[in-house]
Image 1 (tube, one colour):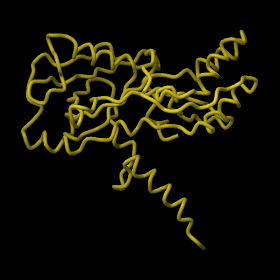
Image 2 (tube, one colour; image 1 turned 60 degrees about the vertical axis):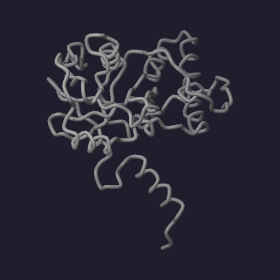
Image 3 (cartoon, one colour; image 1 turned 120 degrees about the horizontal axis):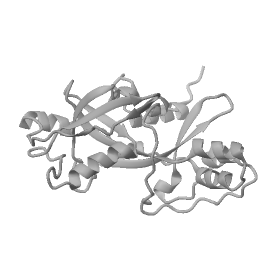
Image 4 (tube, rainbow, N blue to C red; image 1 turned 90 degrees about the vertical axis):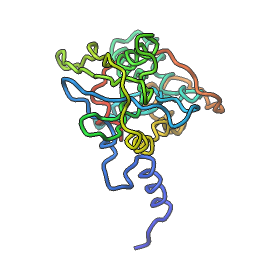
Length: 251
């Protein structure tokens, strides 16, 4: 049997992007937010030019086999997005079933940050929706806290997860009142050397693949052609559940 080297190279690149080259699970890189209190220290970017967070939007598409796939919205990269075209097109049909589908495929904001899990001391990726991210930003803009990512005078952040029916709520989450050093110089150096490539998580989807998926949702629509990438596009934030996302992230 002859080894397909091209496919092997693709698999190697995929494993490198997902951080599974060390034999660990990709999802193990993420903080699993448990019900109750979760204490973390949000880490700054690796340098002054790098934001401490990465932003994307996700379309969740249910296939004919019932499996859910995640697609990063191409508008994040200032490209035409066929799934956004489908989303808006479905609302124009005045069909109740199409409205339900539109709600399902709506692009929802996700934000990635590097954090220290205070339970384990490990650097994890915190993946959150707009509601929890707004709380973090509000704290940074509050003069009583300031830059909570500062390693010398920042604040730990307490994520409080409560359940309301099947949906989680994070409205009680807040920074700890007292500023403190994140750790010793040695610990800080280790953490900063262990930062995950959160910006690399914001994948540029293949336009034609996204278009084919969109056409299965609304085949009667005329879809725009792709445009050249420029600076990332700022999008209006939206609400949405944080649940289930990590389980579908690899789809």
